[in-house]
Image (tube, rainbow, N blue to C red; front, side, top):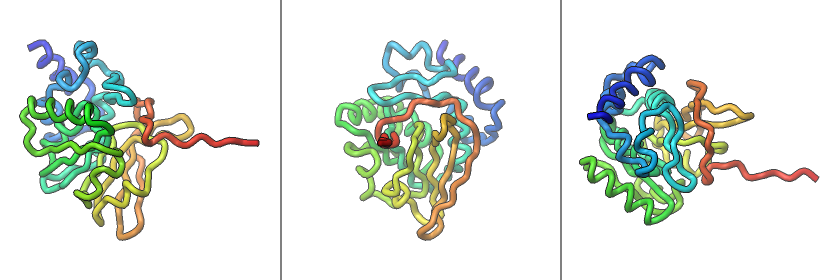
Length: 217
């Protein structure tokens, strides 16, 4: 019951006041037990407004950032969605309530097995997790209506954009010049339009999307 109260407060204090008006998104965030997708040591902080570590190289972004990112992504009930680097599976669980099917990726088998077990315990029946390079592992199941990268990235790989259908959207948090912003890319034929939606709180860049270091001689 304590977690249920905290979840309602999260929605009321972190989601609704931040221009998130979709009832479907609000209801999904108010239903999925965020604490279940975190390591035991962090569950007591599941509804605190901060990034939380999930595993090596993975964090759970704040509810505020996640809700605004979903709003920018405009999920539809007919969408086939890709959830890149799903971590513990929380983003997939929420997304599964908003789209027809979720294909998620994780880098290693241990992470995949853990995410699958937690999704099953949460009674999510329309999501599957694929092991491999998070950017390319599920390319064979595409193309996708929606690609979600619920992390901070510094670069957007073309290999990921190419998995979008025409008219498909990719939503993520792009960090540049020390600032993180929620952004979408929309595919129009072989070109992509980019739009910034909000300033994000998230700061932790996941390794797969870190910019390669440059050297000046």
